[in-house]
Length: 261
Image 1 (cartoon, rainbow, N blue to C red):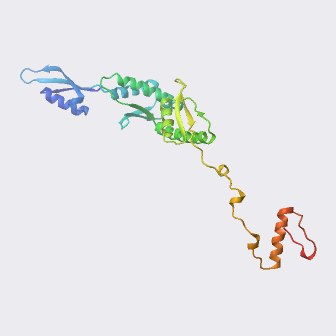
Image 2: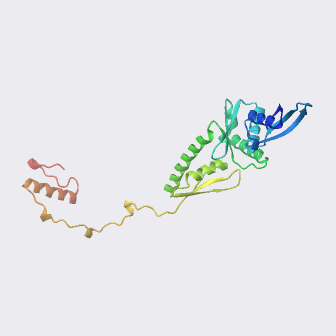
């Protein structure tokens, strides 16, 4: 919690200067008169402090952890629609992320506990490093769609490896509107995992599944309707019929009129 001590001719004047120096409003501050001096011309020393905030307490905690770990990283607090985002960057950010973000998740959980110790805090804490979480969302979303296609095609249930709550939410969200599969989580932490189940929708009609038409359903073609313009055409037609009946090599003719099929 930041605070300053300001000496002025009145408490109001000292408070105004303190608020300006801290960059906060009076509603966000606390103040107390530390010292009063002077007989004729009064002087007041006022201590102006920022009211405790959960997000600021979490920021101080995260910076303290990084400093104690001896890592070269900086932390920037941003207010987003989803909550309070703590963006960590620097040379050693990979150590803060850890294997599949496990260190990042642990730091985020502890920062939330610290923020909740401040009365009146009601917000979400998100700790990220070098945009790791967005990249992870893209990777998991692609994986989810690929496995969903595999499950729907094979008709078999697919059980993913254990994931943390953040990664499970990504999988569920990516497949929430999929018409051919559904998802649920099963197991206990830290071995809780996502299961992709193919829905029992009616299969699409395939060509092999369509009812075959009987021969009687096809329109009959009369040989008498076929017109041959020359004797050669007639010969070719007759030879073709014989070939289909007797097979290759059984309708050979020799001599000048040798035919090849």
